Image (cartoon, rainbow, N blue to C red; front, side, top):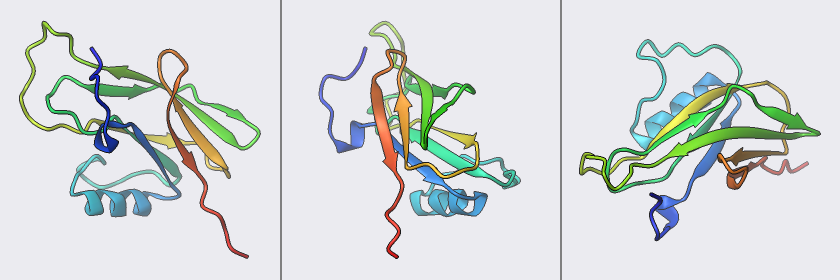
Amino acid sequence: QAESRETPLHVAALQVFNSPDEVQAWEQARGIKITPSNGDLPPGMYAVAEVGERGTGGYSLGISRQAAIKDDVLYLKASFLAPSNADQVTMALTSPCSLVLVPTRFYSRVLLLDQSNKVRASWLAPLVKG
């Protein structure tokens, strides 16, 4: 069952990184570790999708390997899972997220779609001042 009240911490988020070094810098800034323990990520672009902060365990996010690209927009399909009222869950703050390797190219925008094809998060490429 989805939470009825959404605050900025409860909203899904999406971030795109141009290299493994950028992913690791994001991890350090957030104080989390989602990359392999040996720190080895293959070269390439990555996206991190976040469910947002939740008050209990039982939430998860899975991103399909089947991404779609139309023009310069990348569409990532995700499954957002939430515990049912009958589930026993840990009573602790959680922030589920998922890291995926994406095809390396320019994207003006990346969209994260849920099971109903609703846009749950988006990322816009930074403007380059020229």
